Length: 314
Image (cartoon, rainbow, N blue to C red; front, side):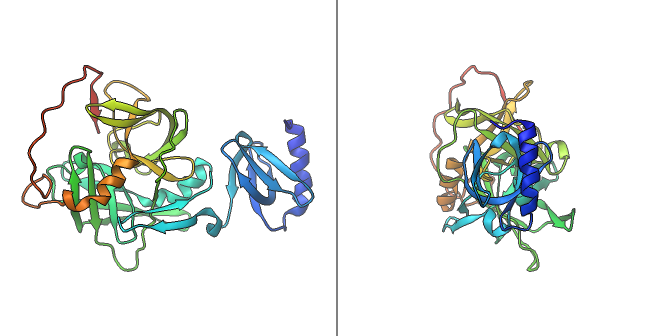
């Protein structure tokens, strides 16, 4: 394990290689290393110094600056509107910089929530309770122009599909031709574990583009017949429908509720429910003459109350 003095010596020595090809690695002490990243792991990063290999602990790294082409690898588009990609681990700061524009505010005459773009055609995911009993919807995007964000509102929003049981909704925004939205990638591998770091982006209490970080407290908390991700990332009114990211920038859940009166007890809908919802979106096609799904089914028996602490949807 290197001491602070050793890190300073290494950083000073590598300053001579500033013109070399590679990435800029920012260290916790404020130093920077310019080197080629060979392999990234959850707890350390291996870099090539040109004359030797160096393993740097993740906790000593505050960020890695890479070219855009190296940030997202092997993007795969699906027939179900979303895309997934092979993404390397990054810091929260880097991931917010990369994917933050893909998170939007969804508003109606009676409230607001969050959502996120899954396709360049303007399709986005949010919670059903954000748009429940509403038809006049608007989506606010935050376009980055230079070093600042430009707020832009779109009012031509179509409800494509809804699933009240899962608390999911699929919307489509009629975007101008000169606007290409930043999309987020959905995780397709179910490898989330208790203790994994996650973060959320949303609009709690109308505070736009807020970021909260935490861990997965329980990856499969059962509640009324469904399973939710329990997280310490702060979830508040207005976060509803926003993405919960892992440290690769993949969406692993959709934030939708918290324990009433509790702190650090947020919940998110696992992404596997979202993937199934998108795959079967024709079965949940929205009927403009009612707020229910486009097809009518026999109602299932009422779910029994569990006696657990009350969950308050946001």
